[in-house]
Image 1: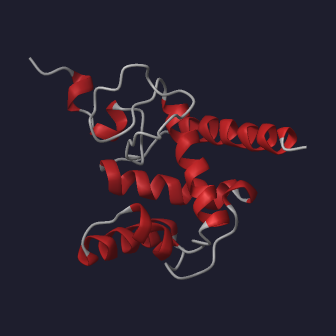
Image 2 (image 1 turned 135 degrees about the vertical axis):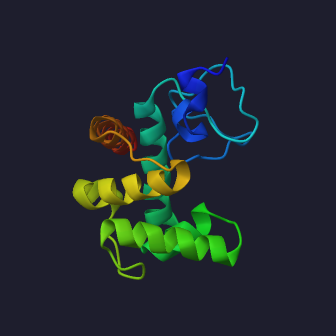
Length: 153
């Protein structure tokens, strides 16, 4: 018998709503000690999955200068050109943000980035994420940034 949890999309089951790929270097706070998915990270709670995704998006913006929906999606979704175009058009459509318009830094604009995040989640999983999950994960992301910045001094 298939449980309700097993019927959920993979990203939701894994508490990894943007389906972040797991690598040997993946050592995110909140990762499940036992990783049973061979491809994607698994987190102990949705908040930690959201936090990790926002950290990655902030790094894309800051280090790789990926500051449009189009540029972010082209790295996030390294599939065929057709799949990338559909992905970026869906995210742009859900958010109302033209895919080539410059975006603010994720840590500076919760409203914009929660919309982008939820649109990406819809593409990845076929469903939106509860706003409470996004808010809590974003708060953990901001705490991480402040801790990291203070430790740098």
